[in-house]
Structure formats: C-alpha cells, structure tokens
Image 1 (cartoon, rainbow, N blue to C red):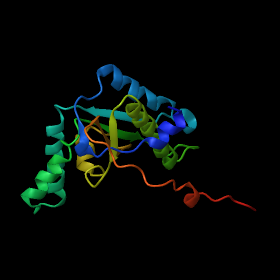
Image 2 (cartoon, one colour; image 1 turned 120 degrees about the vertical axis):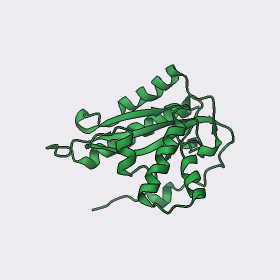
Image 3 (tube, rainbow, N blue to C red; image 1 turned 45 degrees about the vertical axis):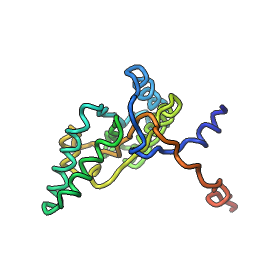
Image 4 (cartoon, rainbow, N blue to C red; image 1 turned 90 degrees about the horizontal axis):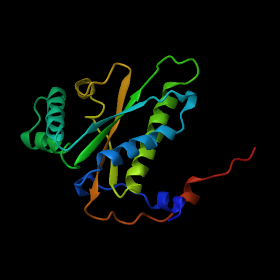
Length: 189
C-alpha cells in the first residue's frame, strides 16, 4: 500500500474495541522510536512517554477515581466506576507528556506542544503500521494536577493525552467523504 493511502485510511479505534495482544517489547521500541523524527523546532525533543501496561491499568483507574473525588466529592458510585473503567478499556496506554521550556528565547511553548503532538502522531502511525489500533484520548482527568503529579510529571510538564493501544477487535466504520475541498483555500494577495 502506498504511504499516502495508508495515512488516508488511518482512523482511531474506539478504546472498547482494543484487546490483547499488545505490542511486544521490540514492537513498542519501534513505535516509540518513530516519534524521534517528528518536526521539532530547535531539536528540543520536548516529549517523553510513560507506558502503562496491562498490569498497571487498575492502579491508574484508582488514580482517576481519586482525582474525580477531589474535584467532585459527591460523585455517585456509578460515575466513579465509569471513571475507573476509562483506564481499563484498552490493554495498553501510553501517556504523551510535554516537557516544556517555558522561557525559551526562540521557541514558544505552543511550538513545543505541537512537536509533542507531531511525535505522538508518528508513534500512532507506527503502531497502526504494525497492525495495532490506537486512539488518543483526553478529558478532565488528563489535565488534572493531582493525576499529573501522581504520574510523576515535573512542574514544567503537561500530560497531553493517553494513547490507547491494542489489537482491534472490530473494524471502525468507514470515514466520511473527502473533505479536502471544504477546508482548503488558496491565498491571493
């Protein structure tokens, strides 16, 4: 398959449709190494990744519940279980972390965050190429200071999302028609 065709056919797999097996150690290294060639102004490499394997997911679910209770102490038990389940849907999670240089003289924080996003997308494409499904998920738990601290993030780091990875158990619906014409214009002075 042509590379552009591969990219155009890529789509997120819902976390509930990701099952074991997960990438092997060698496959995971290849996936993570794919991030290294991402566009990165100043070659800061402002990213790092925290792998959360199948055995660690229950502890992450407990952490999500603790964070929710800190934000909303009166949360109903059913909603707490739903929050816990967010860590258990996919068999492997990778936390995408931006390590930011706040006062860089040439490279603003937004460009550093964009580099992390580009690196993470390359990582997801590598996983897809190896036959794994992925989805990048965010939400209030991701931006919660208690969660970030509990995961060991430093003061200059941000959690940008959890990449859910596994073997797809179902095919995602086909993408909608090509929208390129609707989102592209050509500037003329």
